[in-house]
Image (cartoon, rainbow, N blue to C red; front, side, top):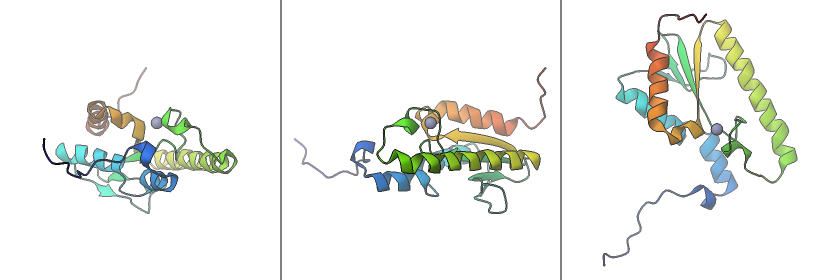
Length: 150
Ligand SMILES: [Zn+2]
């Protein structure tokens, strides 16, 4: 039998404390964002990060294409998925806060669009299927010509 080695196991969500969890979800350079950046980099795209002059400080910015990508944590940005709706204590504290976050996101999105930016949001939960996110990114970035529907 091989010796029991302490390997660097990824901590499961269950084992993480609330604050650790929050830090992972809300901080810059969080894992979901790194996954998206790695995908883009592998596809040969180059980008800027967290431009403070743009509404909402988008995570990933393609200046010449005039496109931005947000990578959103589901809880923090109040996504309509299961991850975002795990039962939590202190609901009275979080709900208004999360609603404000959501409203802020909506405002930022509108401001970016008004300024002629194309915006793609990748949600944390979508990254369970990395291939599908990759397709989405490629579609978004390669679609430089305006395609009008209907
Ligand atoms: Zn989600």
